[in-house]
Length: 115
Image (cartoon, rainbow, N blue to C red; front, side):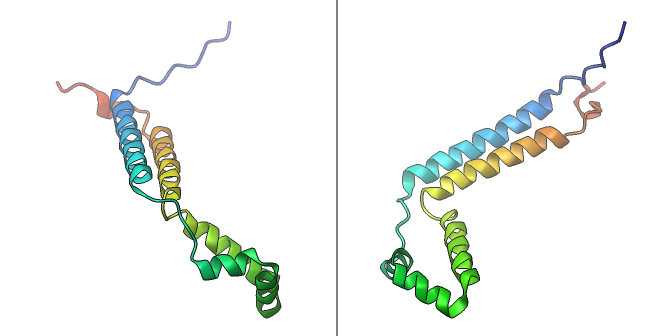
């Protein structure tokens, strides 16, 4: 019969560290969400981007790349303001916790009790 591969040892320190990362990140995200206002673009920028004439002028001056670059820059800058920052914080928290869990050494040497 085929043998099952050995299971990696349970690592309580890894679980505690990942749990702390998640708890801290989510707490920070909730605090950001509760204390911040929704993002409102400035009137001039919103008017230019919401009208066909403004986008056509931008495309005429800088081409289609300028329009795409403007839209991408607005999207990225929106991630770091207001309530959107809370969602960005959650995403970064989950990435950090996942990377910590994935790349934690599996040899178990650091979890051995002291002699």
